Length: 223
Image 1 (spheres, rainbow, N blue to C red):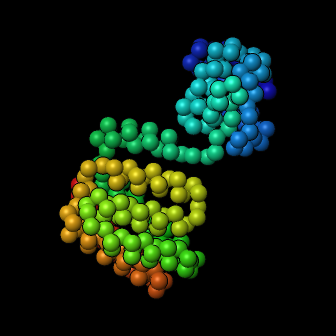
Image 2: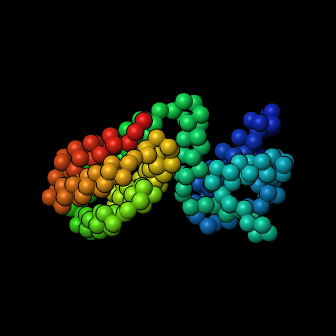
Image 3: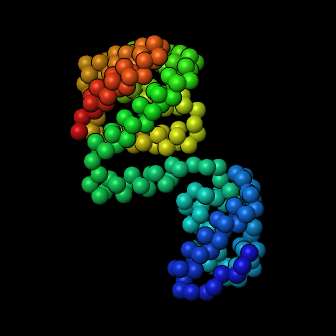
């Protein structure tokens, strides 16, 4: 590794962060692998240990690495939760519109429907059918709300795409956390019926119908 030129402190820290990321790539490190010590990084980049410590702290705070007291620093598994949590927090305080999140959900869940139908994934459809049957047993607002979220998460996870699942899980969680989507018992019962209609369409291999029901279903959410 080339030593890092000393510039002003903030810029130097970011240069060290970039250099650490490049080191991880060059060394082909994977989740669970241990990174060099602060002292080793300091020698490699020819910078002070305090700058190395700041860079490692940044990587820890953004979820790239985790520090085990007395053991060292280790590379994390891929996870975009922290990144998206920060994004949605900033989006919210900058007057974000919940309709934007609903639009994202419609795009992603429609994509999941296309994927399930294209793969003729009978296992995924059977799992969704089971969830629908369980959801119909809900009696309270909280139970209906949990059932609604469980169905949509299962639909997205049926893609078996880890990155897609992580991304959409954060979006779904955020959407269901906001207070804009409180429905009545009657409305939630209709939501459950629409879940069943989506599964019926999936069983027929009719992606267009499933997506049409989904689009109407999404409009149940109140702004």
